[in-house]
Length: 94
Image 1 (cartoon, one colour):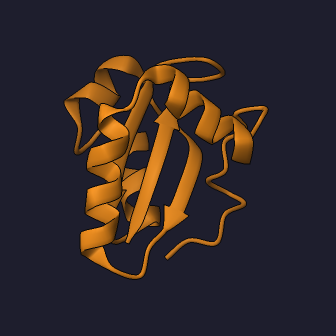
Image 2 (cartoon, rainbow, N blue to C red):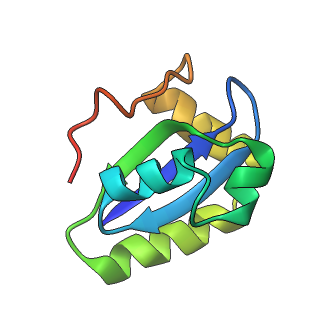
């Protein structure tokens, strides 16, 4: 399972999600399928991803992250990806 953050661009709109197939889910987001929010705000850049062995732990982390302030989410993703680079083509998926 993966918990991920997507952004519309540097310092843009953020979206936090959870999935069992990161490559499939990101492809859906990029094609404008699966999330009205992502489609509406053009959130297509994968800027953070963390893999979990257990689904319950991943889901709990995703729910917690959704409650975080924007500043806390930005601090997390900038610790792993300071330039907010789109990681989709470089991360080891699934």
